[in-house]
Image (cartoon, rainbow, N blue to C red; front, side, top):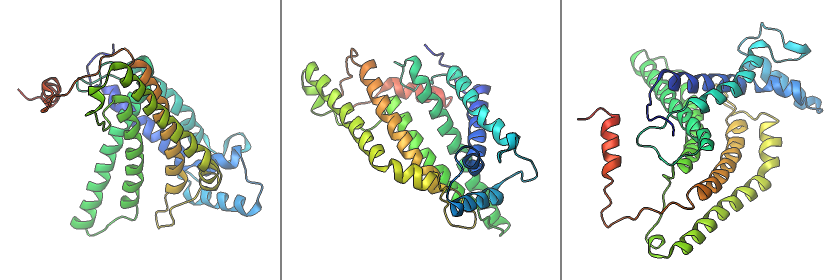
Length: 282
């Protein structure tokens, strides 16, 4: 079992490093589109090239391998799987988290840590904007849209983390009163419906999302102009797929676990004590 020691150095550094590298790659995605799948349509090619020229953080750096992406772009792209691997291997389960985990659940746990860091970054961006707007009367053009962008990722990733933690909303009024075989049937039906929904969502919107929104790198159309449509919509399909996979993994992992019974007043003393310990309460 993962050691219940959280808040260490690497639990801060690795999620933040993952966010930095992923953010850099996303911001410079037009360069990778031009290198890997350059559009055959001249108008679309000019549009993507113009986006890259306008959004490139380091325009003075030449592209590698005769392409458009420079050494920083490639370094960030190659570091993403490395950081993700080390992050999943080094993640620690907190006392208040779901205890009956398996090795494959490390993916959901690390994505949960990344989501927590995104919440922290989003809060810092909002505080920075408030200070500039009301103390210096010099508001930014990017803070509100960046917060909206980060909030979209937080909302989606937290859904996957909630599925791994079994902390989504469940109505157990009837579930607890049926025999165990019927509970298994309900669990199978629930997972099947989730997978069915994910399949038809991906099948029905794949072209709209990945060909129109992502490949054309659709922007938000504002002064800051972040690629919210080009990133959030593909992320929806990715997260829904991960949630469906996690629901099947939960079904297998929890098959032989006796479900907890809830009384009229369900006060979880263990969870309450874990919360007190996490905040340092005596």
